[in-house]
Image (cartoon, rainbow, N blue to C red; front, side):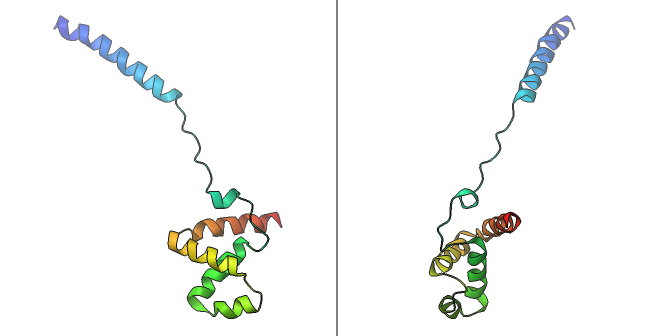
Length: 101
């Protein structure tokens, strides 16, 4: 019985120290997606990428480029975003752009 009592104290101490160590650790905030922070060239906007994505699936993207609704760069970026499943990132950037306007 005495052996159990003598082991209980060090185990409790180790557990307390472990918990105290964990409480002091903080997780670093994840860095934002590069699309959200990079400077875009003048022929690329988040809204244009999203519009190009819609046009790729539902409309005539070639006519939209000819009419100046979207740029070829936005179409290319929309294709990459669709392939990488990153349209949500472009939507987030578009929301930020709209809020800044």
